[in-house]
Amino acid sequence: MPAHVSVALPVYRGARYLEASLRSVFAQSFRNFDVTVVDDGSTDDSVAIAERVARDYGAGIPFRIVRNTTRLGLVGNWNRCLDFCTGDYSLLFHQDDLLDVDMLQRSVEAFEAYPKAGYVYSAYRCMDEENRDLPPWATSPFGGVSGGIPFIQALLHENFICCPAVVVPRAVYEHVGRYDRRFAFSPDLEMWFRIASRYEVVCRPEIGVRYRLHTSQATEAFRHTRKVRAELEYNCAALMGLRSQRKVYPELWQALVRANLWMLRRYLWDSPADTLWATRILSRCSIDVAAALRDSVLERTGLRRTARGRAA
Image (cartoon, rainbow, N blue to C red; front, top):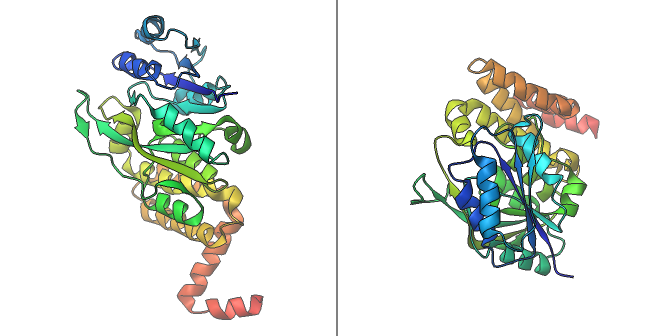
């Protein structure tokens, strides 16, 4: 039986670009997919646009619109979308981006070649409000299948994964859980770490998505107005994503704990509210934090080797 892909679009006041986004989804060369639009209380014409585009361009493709009765917010609506992703694979696509016509086909082929992969991510290009091409913010250093410490370390250095360019098996989401609503800026990154700590992943080097940058974009506004929180979230996303696998990557885990402690010290007085948020995240790892503080003290006093010798 051929694979089936569920494409879900979390929508909130997306009228400006939603038609182009949905048309790019319905134009896929791979035809065994369904589309769900989950509207989070839009006050514009988003729902009417989605209905019209599905009627005009979605012939033969199962389509539905879900309207949330209460506002769930960005991450809450992502998780709501997953409730309706019943296919073998899931794609959370954005209301303002464009999907390459062969993106789903290439992703399914990658899963056929690597059936145990935790996700397939495609290369991407950026564009502005007028569809003019812009370079990507980062490119993947990998091609084909990868994983383990080399992949995780590269992702720690730079986020080269574009969120709407990632297709995830439904079984993987069922295994690792939903997106973490504590993150306002980096819930996708935390998920990529969480999955990559357990599975191999696959990069398709072809351009799969054109990612739109514009002033009304939620993450763009967050990036410019709350730079400290964005930086803290990046480090905390890695920490939480790897937390359940910390015994598999002990040295990397301890380095992450210490990096987060250093970040808290750096921003404590500049942004106390954001530092408090990160402290609450870090409190989930109290034993590891205590160990990192101990090691730091021992290093500064020159006693670390003696302490380790005694412990041994």
